[in-house]
Amino acid sequence: MTRHATAGAMGVSLAHQISQPLSNVAMYLHVGQQMLAARPMEPSRIADSLEKATGQLRRAKDILERLRDFVSRGTLRTTPTDLGALTRRVVALAEDDARAHGVSVRLDADPVPQVTVDALQLEQALINVIDNAIDAAAEAHRGPGRVAVRVASTENGVRIEIDDNGPGVSDTVAKHLFEPFMTTKQDGMGLGLALSRELVTAHGGAIDWQSLGPGEGTRFRIELPVTPENAHGA
Image (cartoon, rainbow, N blue to C red):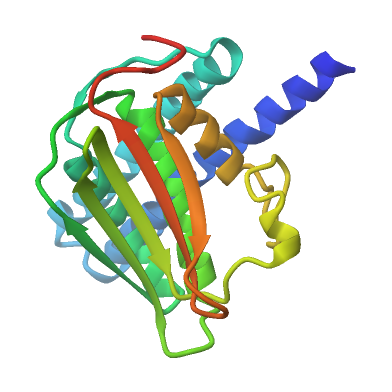
């Protein structure tokens, strides 16, 4: 029973992580079809959309393989990484979804030292947290939804903070926030934050959260050491 439960959780985790790039593939193909119908004499723009779709398929394949390695064997492939550049890339990926939800995303990234991490795995952890922040901000009661992402140095490493102005986390959910299958979303699987914690912890880092006040939103904080301290190794 334990083996079946573990295999099931792994399968759901992998499905959760590759859903975003596959959704992007569908979007880019749809855009390409629209341009082909409306502007068939502009092949360069159509080719650009198809190339983006191909890139997202490669990304889905990489995520699938790397998360499989991590979940089944705890494997990380670490390299010195510019965390500011990685965060900018994640924010850029999230902006279309944020706009569709009426949410603005702001990034403030100070120059920070490189950290030795598995960039793809850490990117997935950050995508999960930012996506959750966008979903929360879409339900903001006071003004339009806003998400603020900050990258800064700490005494021993680098910190990423993600603030949203959503309704906040209820006391009931707060007790189980990082537990697998804990979700308040109708179509959610409750694996994003649980997997993010596993990925961040594997890098010797920590993830926590705090309320910004009743109805004022939530702040998530990810801290990573500059010196490699990951428990699983490369």
